[in-house]
Length: 251
Image 1 (cartoon, rainbow, N blue to C red):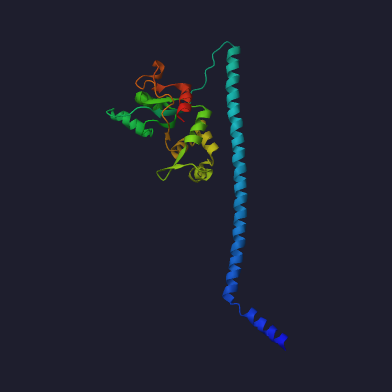
Image 2: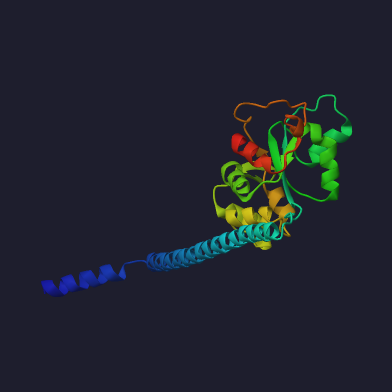
C-alpha cells in the first residue's frame, strides 16, 4: 500500500509541472539550437571570407611583381637598343601640406580645402590629371608632392590610415569597417584598399574619400627650407620619386 501511495504521489508531481514552464523550456532549447547553428554559419562565412581575402592578397602580389618585372624588361630592352626607357606618366600622387596659409590668396586656400589639406603635415592621395596638375602648380609653394611607390602606399594606409565614418575620424580596427562602406565596390579589406589606390582603379575617389586625410609627423631632422622649391634645395613642390624618402621620415 505504501508503494502504491508513493507511485500516486510521484505521478501527481510529474503532472504538476505547469504547461507554461514546459513551453518555456522548449523555447529555450529551440533558441539554443538556433544560436549554435547561427554561430556555426557565421564561423563558416568568416572562414570563406578569410580565404577570399588571402587569395586576393596573393593575386595582388603576383600583379605587383609582374608590373615590376615588366619595367625591368623594358629598361633592359632600351639599353640593348641604345635607347632611353621612357616610363609611362604617373597616375598617382601624394600631396603633403608644409606651410600655413595666413594672408594667402583665396584661390590657394580654396584648392587646399578641395584637397582636404586643412592642417600642416596633412597628406592625401590624388589622381594625376590636367586639372589636378594645374591646381598643384597654384599651391606648389605650400605643398610637397610626388609619386608614391607601393611600399609608401602600404605604410601610409596600414600605419596612418583612419576611416571617415559619419564625419568622424575612426581607427580602422578590422576589415568589416571597410566592407560596410566599400563592399558594394568590391573593396572588402586593407589589401583591396591599397590596390585600388596604388593602381588608381575605377573606385579610386571612393577609396580615398573613405580615408581621413593622413596626419603625419614633422619629418625627422625637420624641414630644410619651406620657402624654396625642392630643385633649389628646399622642401616645396614636386619631388617626383623622392617623395618616398620624405614619407619614410614622416610616417
